[in-house]
Structures are given as structure tokens and as C-alpha cells.
Length: 106
Image (cartoon, rainbow, N blue to C red; front, side, top):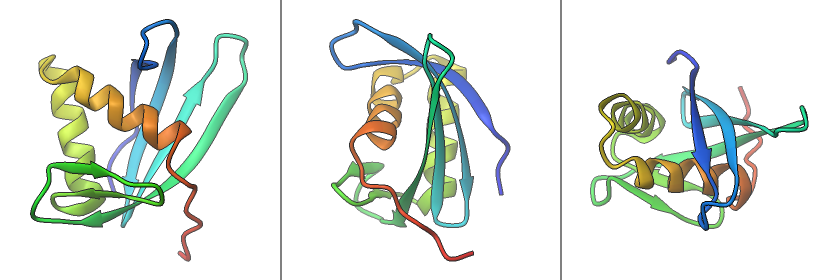
């Protein structure tokens, strides 16, 4: 289990920014996006382990090297080192708004 990490993300056309908090638990990435008006969205996204892609966004899940923990580490490294931030934003934006929600059986 990883700690929560908070950052700012933007939508693909760079017209809006959101505060996003994410955490990896088992095979799930939990994402919360806070809107400027005070409302928020929470979502669970399934993350499958994969050896071929650093990450691959699909309709129902995300594939990532080393699963949810690997995706979490990739995102945190991108934001902390200010490297490949646009790729990290793409993953979080699609996780929050595009990928179907996964209801895990914990």
C-alpha cells in the first residue's frame, strides 16, 4: 500500500486545472479530483501488470509495468523530478474521467 500523493493536473486542451490525489492499493489506483467549486470525483481504476508498456490506457483498465504499484511509482517520479509530466497528467486525467470505474472485492 502506498501513501496518498497530491498534485495538480490539467485537461488535454490546457483550459482547466484540477487538484488530483491518488493512491495504489493492490491492483487498484484510487483517484480523487477536486474541482474549483469545492466538489470532487472519486474513482477506482483497475491496473493490470504488464511487461510491454510503461502504461497503456484502455477503456476498462490501465496496464502498467509492475501493476498499480509500478504506475504509482512512475507517476510520483514524474511529478517529483518534473520529467514527463504531460504523460503523468494524461494517465491521471484519463483515469479520473475516461476509464470505467472498477469495483474491487477487498
